[in-house]
Length: 132
Image 1 (cartoon, rainbow, N blue to C red):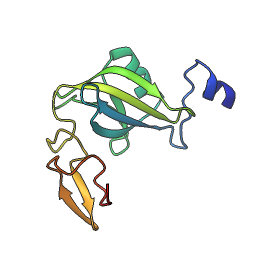
Image 2: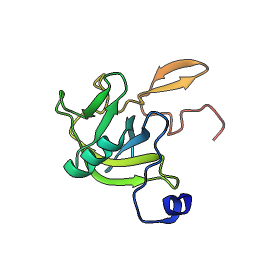
Image 3: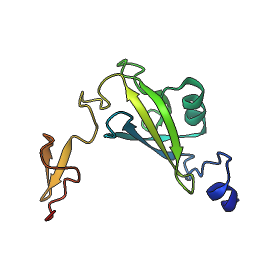
Image 4: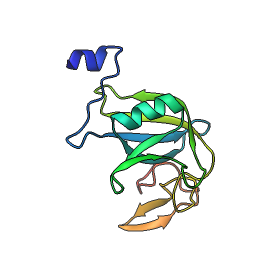
């Protein structure tokens, strides 16, 4: 089974004990990391069928289509899965902010010396303080 999962052409997601895989969403045009959420088998099927990012909300215990209340849907341009099929990468075209706070990305703060600092985009990509 691992050989099929890692080398084959069949979609065989390796769900965790809760029936979930991690979904990572990036902006198709910019490559920016937008959000991370979880997907179950039904969310993956709904995303494939609709072409719009659908996840499983652990807090609500149900499917959640990104943008279902805000209108900020994520149109999927491409779906990829990692080598052992336990994480899915969605390259999307966002119709608005990805974050429920209204920020373009859920990753709008850097960690500096144990504190959170709002990212103004001037510090480079990694946000970790080391000599580049």
